[in-house]
Structure formats: structure tokens, C-alpha cells
Length: 173
Length: 292
Image (cartoon, rainbow over all chains, first blue to last red; front, side):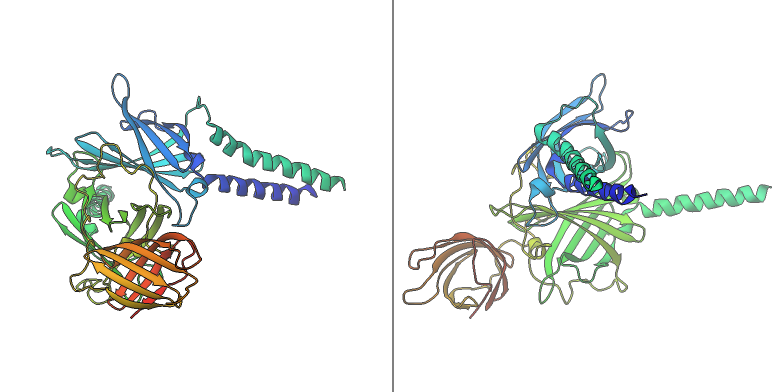
């Protein structure tokens, strides 16, 4: 029973670390796959982060191989005008122009996944309707973590480890 | 047992009808107020629908009256390419351009309300961060009057950012691939640009920093020389700004008439022909309100 407060404190610190981590640009970095393997829309995302900027590459469902939409520079959004986008980014906006259509992606973290709202507007004279889609992306299993991404994942664990050590010492006292 | 099945079928039909009714352009139409009456962001929306097109008019929180962002043509989105927009629209996207910032509103029905995600990105060279805000709007009781009919009037989408300052800043990229913004013909580009023909800021102004400012307006460009004192001032500065609606987006720099040497950006609101107010300052600028 004596350990319960320690465990709660550790869990709180871990949650705090994770939430701090969640509001950072590095959280977007990596290779992502659509959680729905049967999607007829976007299949993959690759997001690279450097400082306060991010590049987004997307692939859409095509046969026999997926279509590469190319890479675009994304706009980074924070909670307010004075926020540091590197540490407080909450959303990315990426715009892909195919010539006949423009697809705008709004990308937000959702736990360990990404929530992606996609809006495609047609610029040709076809009668097709503009359409909206929603996707959830999870990290691709074979993702090679970028340095910043790796640190972002490790940092909370390091804090947790330090807390464990501290609590251990307190316990010994 | 036939009766319950009939009832079930009727109920399903009613549900289907109700659902179809929700996913239509008409669901967006009307005058809407932010449920948070104390919001510092968007206060009111007025959405006019005609067939498969929609026009969105927005107002932002400003003092003493709300700022009119103007009306822009929105893009409507349905669930797929073969959907009928008029009866199946589920999202509107409206883009407001103040000249120095661009605000993209993603508007979705949420029950009887509207959920609005606002993405502000800065087009100027200020160091302000692009920011996101979310709002919920409810339909106004009396829909006959425009929300801006009496109160709102004024400026561009940046005047009311969560930070109290007009948006401005550093969007990564500058040019998106493909070269165009969503919808090519992104509306709003001229909602608040330019300066009112009756506006003339040229003159000698006093500021709450104790200084005297000598302004010259040439069209949409404003210049000033300001000094702490006419003789041996401790500081003196020059400014060049561009008028967009009722906003002046400016750069300023101290000059060596005084001894202080700093520089930065300013976003000023033209409250009236005789009053300016700072919405955003960088570089340690002291003054906030100018009058004459």
C-alpha cells in the first residue's frame, strides 16, 4: 500500500511528459500508414521535420502501386501567436495541387496516431463534387525514427526512469 | 405483427430523412453567434446559401465594436465525388485574406450548432506564429438581422487573434506546391484590403509613450517620424506601414537622434481618423495609443 502514492506520482509524471511531448512538431515526424488497409483514399504519409518547418509527402490508393502525390512544405499551427511552433505545434496544413484538383490536409495528433481531414476541391470543369474524407494514420512499423523523433519518445521514459530512481532512494530513506 | 414492422420502416425513413436534411447546404444558412460571448476570436457568422454555393460573412471581436472581416465565397464539400452538394454538403471552407494574414475557416454542422476550426497563418515577415482556434456557433434567435448590421464594423481577420494581436507571422513554405491555395479562387482576397478614401492620417500625433509622431499617409502607405522630445530626445524612430482595411502592418526602427537603438514590427488598428491603437509590438516599442 505504501507504494501506491509513488506509483500514482510516477504515472502522473509520465502522463505529463507524454502530454508535453504531444504538443511538439517532432510528434508529427515519421512514416505513417492508414489504419484502414483497405482505404480507397490516402494510404501513406511521410513527414519530415526540421526546426519549425515540416514537409509532408503523401501517397494515394492506386493500382497496381500507390500514387505518389509528391512532397510539400506544410504550414505549422500553434495555440496562439506567441507560441513556439517547435514545442507547441498542434496542427499541420498541407496543400497538394494535382493541376485538376487541390487537396488540403489538416493533420492533428490523436494519441499516438494522426487524425487527417482531407478536402479535395476540383479545379477542372468536370461535374465532380468537392469531397471531404477523414483518416486515421498509425506509425509504420518499420519507421526509422529521426533523431528528434527518437529523443521525443525517449525523453519521457528517461524522466520516468529518473523518477523511479528518486522514489527508490526515498523509499530507502 | 405487420404493424410493428411498418412502424419500424417509418421510423427508419424518418431517420433517413432527418439525416439527409442535416447534410445539406441549408443546414449552414443563417446568422450564427459564438456560444462564448466573451470570445476574443470570431463573434458572428452569416452564411448565405444559394443552390450549391455559399457565402460566409464573419466578424471578429474588436473594441469598441466588432470587426467586419467581409464576406467571401466558400467552398462546399460532400462525402464523395458523386454527391449532390446542395443536399449532401457536410463542410464549408472559407478563406479570408487580410493582406498580412490568411484565415481558413473549416465549418461543420454539429447537431444544431456549427463547429468552426480557424487556421490563421501570417503572410508578413513578423515573427508571430500561425495559430489554430476552435469555436462553436449557435443560430441567432432573430435571423432577420445581419450580425454586423449595427455592431461590427472594422477590420480584417487578424485583429482579434487569441493573443489580442492581429495575426502575422511566419508560415513555412510560403508557396505551397501547386502554387495555389485550396480552391484556386480562394475567396476573401480583397475583403479588407486598401484604405478608406476618407482616411487621412497625415498630421501630428501624440502618443501615450509621451512622444510626438509626425505621420504622412500616401495612399495605403504610412510613414512617421517619432521622438520623445523635440530637443535631445532619448529615443527617436521612423516607421513605414501598409494599410489594409483598418489595420496598419508596419516596421519601425530607432534612429540616432536619440540614444536608444531598437527596431521591430508593429500592427496598428485604425480606431478612427484621430486614433490609432497598437495590436502587436515587437522590439520593445513603448507606445500603444496615438491620438490627435
